[in-house]
Image (cartoon, rainbow, N blue to C red; front, side):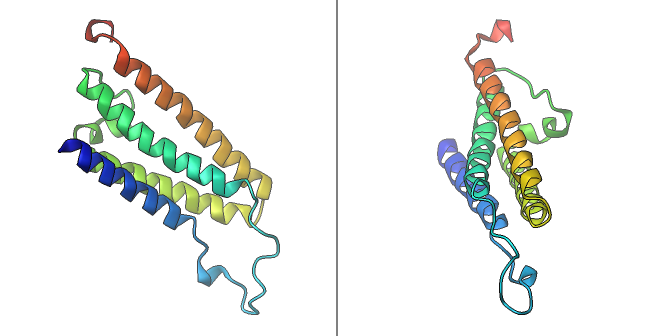
Length: 141
């Protein structure tokens, strides 16, 4: 039963993060020509990898906690006891970051790509660490 909740929650996180990446009609110029330059091609794959890493972060954190580990991040520590709260926190933070990147690329395309690449790289390290901690025997944690 809990795995069904986690799968559905993971799907919800992905939907929310992808929805944040959709362009808003209010940002379109009045003449309908669209933005001065197109979205950098690397951003959409970076958004997909970022959303995937957010889901894996929630999964790996919950798995490690179930195995006896503790959450080291004090901002997430209180949410770690509730999968729904943790998922909501990750979805909100992820959507905010994608929204910020969407606004940023219109002013600085390189900075937007660099931001998403850096954040995704950092989360890849966090996820790898979480899964490594989850595999350790309880007395080694």
